[in-house]
Image 1 (cartoon, rainbow, N blue to C red):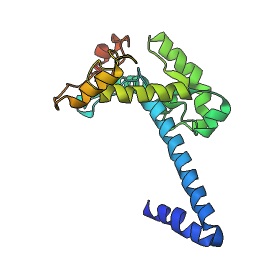
Image 2 (image 1 turned 45 degrees about the vertical axis):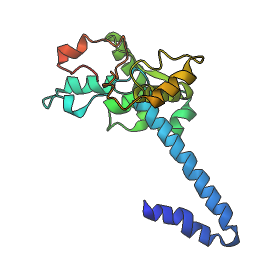
Image 3 (image 1 turned 90 degrees about the vertical axis):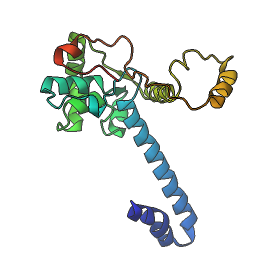
Length: 200
């Protein structure tokens, strides 16, 4: 990483002569845009509301293939959009398919997506897919929800927010407990049958 930073912010500007400021600004802008884009695609594939997360310590060492596949299905989400959207994300907008078939070339994800969606439907599972802005908002909502005391967002309105924020900041540091990450309404019948732990 240090080598890349040196190239982007020292070597290339130095090679640009009197235009070094433009090169420095262009590299900074390009890196910022790339990092925001990559972060958004990764967050949308793993963290929107309704997507489950699993703690390593809760996983069974003897996890079967069926359990592994179910965990991949419950723990990922897609970004819906045009072919250009999928191309710009390196087809990682098909994160569900990527999790299920990590060795499959990414240009095939779009082809298998309808079959995967059908599999979800047949087993009563939610195939999480939404446009990028909705998935980004959902992922950040989940981050915010999990960062605050249990139920805080649900109990807060625009009118009550200022007072509740002041009370939250004045509250002594008390362990709040760990909120459940699973979305309500996710089918649970499959989990015990396969020996999967309940979502955390």
